[in-house]
Image 1: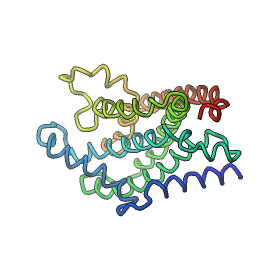
Image 2: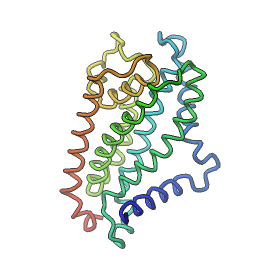
Image 3: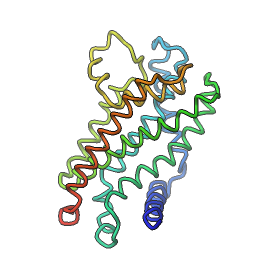
Image 4: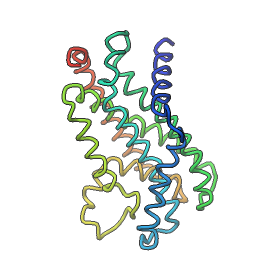
Length: 248
C-alpha cells in the first residue's frame, strides 16, 4: 500500500508540474493531435486514397502522442528526480513508472474527447471498442520497458535525451499515421514493417477504424514485442540502478 501511495503521489506531482501555469492545461492532450490532424487533412487529405481519412489519422495520432509524450518525459525522469532519489527511500523504477501513469491519465482524457470527433467521422459505438483496454495495456508495457531502458542509460550518457528527441520525428514518419499502411510505392517499407510502433498503431486502428476486431496474430505480435521490450528494459535498469546515485 505504501508503494501504491508513493506511485500515486509521484504521478500526481508529474501531472501538476507539467501543466503548471498553463492556460489550456489538460486540453493540450487534445489540441496537439487535433492540430496535426488539421495539417494532415490540408496536405494529404485529398490525395491520400484513404476512405474516411479523418478517422484513419485520428486513430493513429492518439496512440502516437501517448508514446511520444511518455518517452519524452521519462527519458530524464531519474536525472530530474535526483534530489528525491537521494533524500527518500523510493525505488528508482517508480520515477519512469509515474511518468507513464501520468501520461495514461492524459491519454484517457484525449480518447474520450476524440471519441466524440471519431463518432462524427463515422466511428460506430459498439462492444468492439472495449478491446482498446487490453490494447492500451500491451502498449503501456512496451512503453514502460522502453522508458526503463532510456532513463537508465540517460543517467550515464546525457546525450540519450537529445538523441531520442532526434529519433522521434523519424519514427513518426516511419509509422503509417498520415499515409496508407500498404503503400507499394513507399521505398522505406522494410523500415516501416520493422518499426515496433507500427504494430501497436495497427492494433489500435483495427479497433477504431476497421469494422472487425483485430486478428489474433496481431495480438500475439504485440504481446511478444511488449514482453521483449519490458524484459530488456527491466534487465538493463536493474543492472544499473545501484549506480544511479553516484553517477548523478
